Amino acid sequence: MKKILYYAALLFAGTFLTTSCVGDLNQYPHIETTSADVYTSAANYKAVLGKLYVSFVISGQEKGGGNSDMSSNSGYDYLRCYFNMQECGTDELVYTWQEGDKMSGLTYLSWDANDVWVSDTYYRIYYTIALCNEFLRNATDGQISAFSESEQEEIRHYRAEARFIRALAYTHALDLFRNVPFVTEGDPVGNYLPPRYTGKQLFDNLESELKAIDDDLLDRTACEYGRASRSAAHALLARLYLNAEIYTGTARWTDCITYCNRILTAGYTLEDDYALLFNADNHLRTNEIIYAFPVDSERTMTWGATTYIICGSINNTSDTQLPTDYGVPSGWGSFRLRGEFPNLFDANDSRAMFYTEGQTQSVDVVESQSNGYLSEKWTNLTDAGEAGSPSNDGSASTDFPVFRLADVYLMLAEAVVRGGEGSSRTTALSYVNALRMRAFGNDSGNITDGQMTADFILDERARELYMECVRRTDLIRYGKFTTASYLWQWKGGTITGQAVDDKFNIYPIPSTELTANPNLYNENY
Image 1: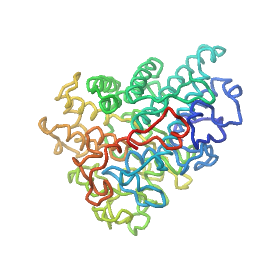
Image 2: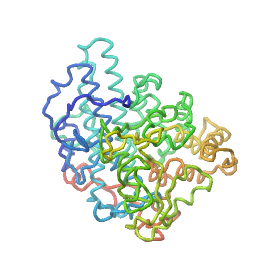
Image 3: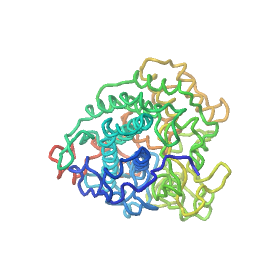
Image 4: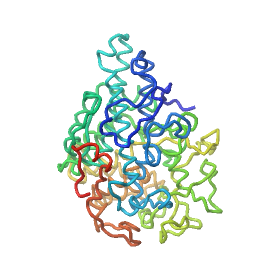
């Protein structure tokens, strides 16, 4: 069994109904137990903290999402929603079940404020934020003063982690929706209409918040697996700075390098085998994985999260691709790689983990499972090659790496290439070539300084980080997501691809939310 922080009791049983949740963003979920009953011991604080962490990967209190936390259009968990938003409109993936799963908006970059996935993602983000706010209201110095000094110190660590989790969720809101409602534990509980924060306002708040918790987060060497260490906060800051120009209009390349350097001195090392970062034993890869969403088929059984990524990548009409080869009993045939994506890889790049038998590279028909290569990057296999889920119920036990060292290498390299200070091209090149040495098994894939351009880094990020929920953000940062400067199959709804309105760089706040809160509005939708 993985040694992961799990919530020990169903302290938040019930549902958090969000037909429109603006008025409820800082309220408790509808619960059977009150805060006075829950926050009575340090152990209970840790149990509630566990609930905050697993809010990213489960959708309810029972197996597979039963006794759901909140109502939504599709009922899926945070990570499944976020994965679709970040991957399914890009050059990486095309989704099979367009009509049944209402995916045409994401697939063709044609959504509106009534799109079910846009709405579900928005409310999932704010559900997690609401949980964090409720926890923080009950973790003030005054609230915990009756506990022992050691217990108070431990709860202060929990409090910093809750602020990190909230910051991570708000970062997703910033990246996806940009100008969003902002509410904290200090705001009134009840019929409160949160103000609309601009992207810059939210960015400034997140920057300040992540710096403020630095001393209270644990060092990676003292941090229990599944919890956020100080390095996790540094990685989140680095990623914020990497995209600062998009969020605020002002580039922050030097600050990105500063926080990458802090991670680089924390003792992380690259995993020798790339594939082991994405299998059922990847919780052992703490040398490279800085922070992950833990997934376990016995404790956090879900039909979303990495179960969705693994099963969704397996053809369910193929006579040759066997789900058991990936540690699961069945494939779902949900998505394939778009035709242009495999061309980013050289022939000897081991990261090109594609199933091609019976598959065309070109996606001529979106709904055809035989069109498009299939990704084999993610599996539910242990290091020993056995299924990672003893019950064989179809759910995975593969964790989702949110931040890992390879991403830090590439963030630093991009920031250096774009003119940031605090490192050098020589250092950046050594990090890029370290990744390529792992990918090629020798120095045959190494590049020269002259080849290390911004566009090369974008392509290298695709090769290294595909299906890790960064592609949409990367393409937007490079001005390629909506424009004609880079086209891929079915972008804009045509097989050869076409530019779309720049408004699609940002998702709209759902129409239900606009109706509830007059402070909010969408630009261009």
